[in-house]
Amino acid sequence: MNFIFESITNHPAISWAVIGVVMAIIEVLTPGGFFVPFAAAGIIVAVATAIGVMPESLLWQAVVFLALGLALIPVCRKLLRRYSDKTPDINEY
Image 1: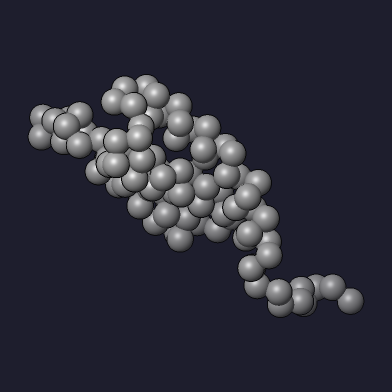
Image 2: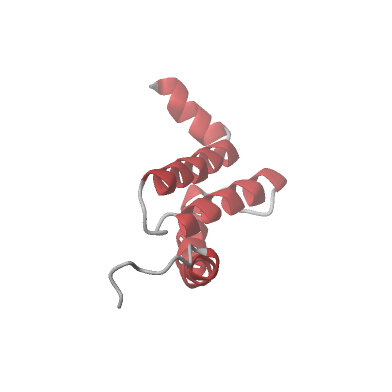
């Protein structure tokens, strides 16, 4: 357990990448498209942290993650609607 905490504090970029991947896996297992923006936000924060653009504070990283996730919701919804399956509903007459 101590190893996990030390990994998170020493390598936050890896932690954010894991959060993004876990969110993507959850999205694959559940329908709806809710976790897509947060998976993308996790990957973006991981990359920004790895290249040194993101501040060192975990609080600021979490705030940026939440802000990006909320900002990406309309963008992802629009993309998911555009590229979703266009098969007609069998219940419509």
